[in-house]
Amino acid sequence: MESVVTVGLDGSPESLAAARWAADEAERRKLTLRLVHAWPLLAPEPPRVSVEMDQNYWAKRIVHTARAELQARHPGLTIVGNLVAEDAQDALLKAAAESEMTVLGSRGLEPVESYFLGDISMPVVARAERPVVLVRAVTREAGSPTAPDAPGSVVVALKLNGPCDDLVEFSFTSAAARGVPLRAVHGRSIPFHAHVPWGVDHDVTEELTRDAQQGLEQALRPWREKFPHVEVTDGVGLESPAKAVVRAAEGAGLLVVGRRKHQPARAPHLGPVATAAVHHARCPVAIVPHD
Image (tube, rainbow, N blue to C red; front, side, top):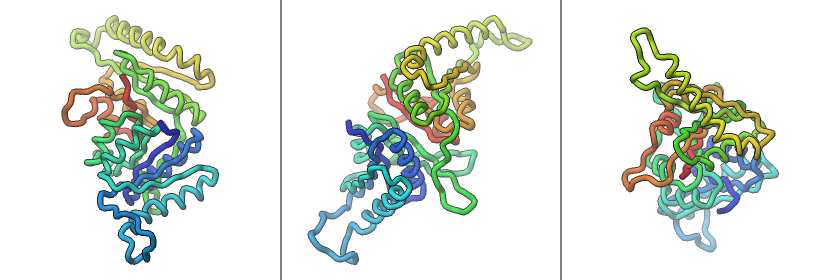
């Protein structure tokens, strides 16, 4: 695996916003930034050809324009550009397997719809072997979409029903690179038997909260010791995990959710928490595959 952050470019304002976010992240982590533009009709590079006759002119321009802007913003950052004569989905999946993370732009729609995962984004998010970050462009008053600002804590959603070291490590590393707090969140729905005519049985909810709190502390303990300078808070929400996570992500700089690596061989999909995150969270969302 190379020490790079890869971003997929397609010429859209959303992909440029993702590239800006990826450049910030690569600089924080002291990694190389790789810009990838995939186009199946990319022609073999001729030895000499005029701009007017160059079939790859627009593909080259997409990468060159982005690289020039990002290099001006980050003069000390190593940036490489790749043109790939391949289907975008296949190219990004291969790149993701070789990268610390892959960053994709997410098209901003109306607030009620929040996110749109297209034909490329969904398979990459659901099948990538390494973390994929979806960055939704924010439209400023001046006009064009840009990358969201990065203040705010890192929030990680923990299920507590299996190993999740990759997920927790990514979260702590991200918080440490930003110098911001990390907040671990676990949502747990109140079981049906806890509902009584006057509300809920507090003995049951207290037991649920205590059990989940112990699980959070156990999952976080070794990572607190490994990252002593990261301020960590945790919380349990007695509601559906999806609602708890989206609520916790309000005002966050990054939301981290997990995805099981080994899924049945069927159409790519995300679990309910990851689906809620990418559709409703306003901040960038990192989907981290784990065992």
